[in-house]
Image (tube, rainbow, N blue to C red):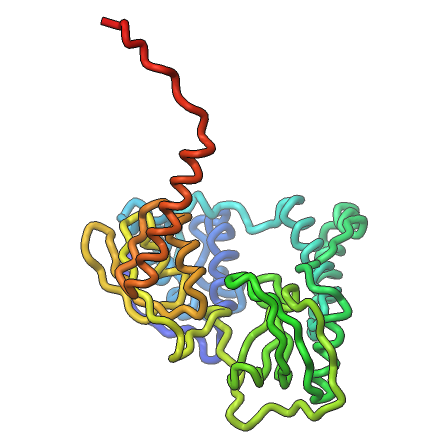
Length: 342
């Protein structure tokens, strides 16, 4: 077996292109054991030097675990290529019928989603799948997909119109955490879709800051005949990691979790995470709505403890006591003990 060395990929080649070649190469080489190195290189349109670099990379690939028996073996002594320990990749990559149908239905839904601009790319991908699957692909055309996050089409349309026309909007907005409806004027900046929900981002005159409004929580949106150009300090938020972006004025909360709830630090934006050992974590985060923290602690069933602020800690404890009291009142009385039992 030839040991791996470090060799660069061809100039300008993307990682995606190389990965695609490697995934195609393995089943072909397994089916053509002992093939001449030059013949194999010509088959994949690369030089012999690049093929050797690809084979060396395969030394680092295989099943999870990373033990010698998990990794692919490759040799090319005497100019003949032989692969071993790669039977799990022996079959060329092909979509199953269910996978192809799922992908085509998803593409059809994507093509009709408001705000999608790459319609031509979606159409080309769909056409290729239909051509490759034949009669099977025709079945996807009979599937109707409706994407509805609860936001009325008129609300979404008005929000888009306000953004394009630079018009201020008046919004009646439900805040679920406080169970109240607020009214505010907003200078729209953009309409975005995140996690299957539509949002309006804009400069909120009530908060005097940039805010994100879920359109399915907008009870009414009115486009005003007023210039809605946001002020210079209004900058779009970075929504790549999370919809929620902490504000310096938000409440700082410190909680401690055991191993069962340690996922909170990976799922929500945090200020800091301190590993306490045995899977326990002390997590600091900022929240705009303390009621969210109470609900989170209650539903984790004792795996999260609020350390600060003390007012929130007391509120969580009081709510838990009220719930336990309600359960005790609603529970039927147990059997009366038999006092004569010896």
